[in-house]
Image 1 (spheres, one colour):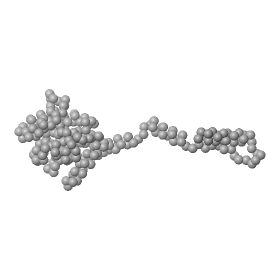
Image 2 (cartoon, one colour; image 1 turned 30 degrees about the horizontal axis):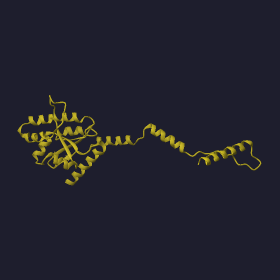
Image 3 (cartoon, helix red, strand yellow; image 1 turned 180 degrees about the horizontal axis):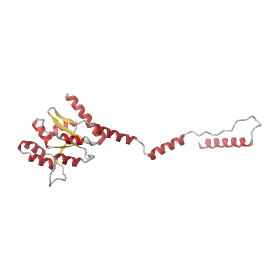
Image 4 (tube, one colour; image 1 turned 60 degrees about the vertical axis):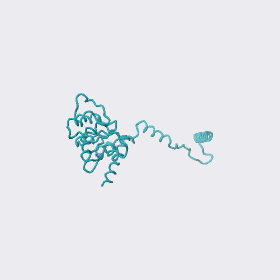
Length: 222
């Protein structure tokens, strides 16, 4: 079971590397509920668990909105709050008026996730939104460990469409290729019909003269 989980995780990481350009060290936004889940289930430091999951070095980060929520949740979440405070703090646009962690994270991800963030969260609705984005990669924790969501059908479809667009030649390239094929076709030289000696017309004599001249020019060019 554990081997299958790691195999699926590696496959998902490879998908996002190929289709969206994810590269190590992998950047992971970690929300407070995810850190709290790891603490409650004694899974160790988030960096160790996530590094083992994705198979490479990780760079964990949080946001002011995530820290604000953890602080407001009180002493039950104090360990998660202290752990999150040690993470890299990203700059969001809600400094003076914090929003929910899911809204804050989605504002950083945007529509294309150009920063190539993984998102570690226990919020199922947030993970569902991420799976609707071509580059939305999400992680969650359960009693069986830490898991990487497999690419959704929408993400696989989007990746296939991008691949088809890359393989299709542009119009100028296609036109140039067709023109080159036409120019490369062998040309047929019109030859006069052979008649018996003494029966060549004046037009036949001129054609023979032109053919011989073309052959001479071709040999000289070689």
